Length: 236
Image (cartoon, rainbow, N blue to C red; front, side, top):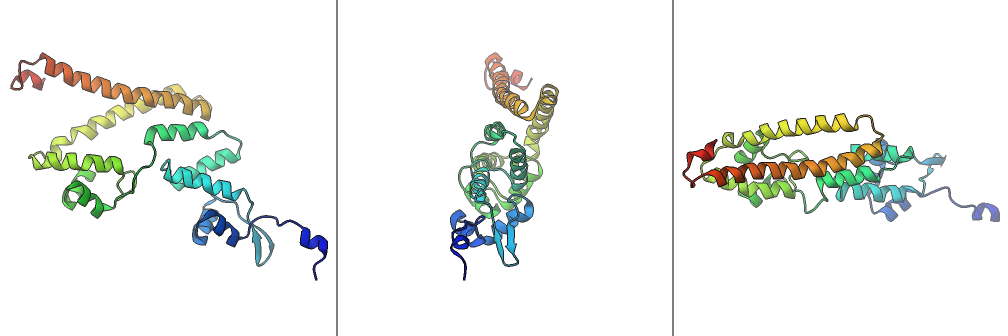
């Protein structure tokens, strides 16, 4: 029979059943997180008794936020958690990610749902993905940005344009991104992570504005200099 002192002794953590109930996640997911290093391994007090630190609940809430609100894959979440465990401030990195990707919004669409929502055929979808005109962040899963472009592509293809006609967009876009990444590396490679994130955030905001401004103004000036819509000066 346990003594009064043994009965009053606090538990060293949470049992798996308690962690499932409090987190709302299935046991299989929690075990996977442990296997992948996202959660610490439990402390075993006997062959059939294991306890997880209570801090796991806060950690699980952060993982969920990073997945759903910030659309981060588990590998990046693991890296962020590792930095935090080492005493690094990860808020600037999360803010940078939000500036780049935005907040997650709306469900992800599989191929069938995406075609139904956008009017694209499966064959057209394959061609657009192969040409890097549709660039899903997850294979065969399409977010709201992808869904916004789908009907525009469907309309263009319906008017007689081909995927090849639009191939210059990703080709020139890659050149712009390569140049931007080179500038970022030159300015931030020597900085600590938090300063790197802060300066990169400024550069992301500046690059986004510059792309829009320069391309739109080049287009506007070309139109402004032409006599009418039939003016061949629009071509060069």
